Length: 225
Image (cartoon, rainbow, N blue to C red; front, top):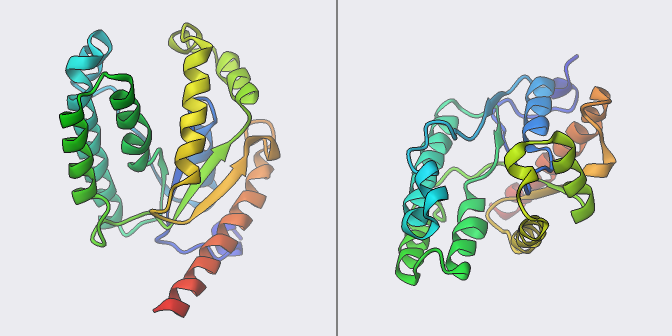
């Protein structure tokens, strides 16, 4: 019996993984997809026409970059639900506005007019009853020290050259964002409570928690319908 059947996970569930850089989103996405026999949805970076321009000139290209991400994630979300679910999604559409666009505005690399235009567009597209929100957002969290250790361990050159203060700020922004997030139900997982890479069986207790959350939320929906 596979884990999806064992824990009665709906075939059409859409689960989104969120968390700061280095927390293990891609690893969790693949592990849950394998365990539940779901499709995966990863962020497409290679085809982004604004990324190189953005890194060369934050102020000029931040708005273009964020609008491009919004459009691509919106199309991907639509595609997922057209397939009738059964997806694990690496990164959510909500992080773009709640963390990155907000950070650009507060740091002065996005103008007030551009920020207001972007957030207005986001609200019109995403924060409506017609937008297909995920059934569950799985937030991976850990201490700042633990996450920095993981970033250093995986050794990506660009990340190694990034100042610690940036990772500290990003960690705080993610914590502030998730503490105020209300768009869909949240399951918070501490990265120290499992080790999928060294112990693949540690995914089962996570699937069990997901099952309990999904069925609890379904009962709440029925009660309020």
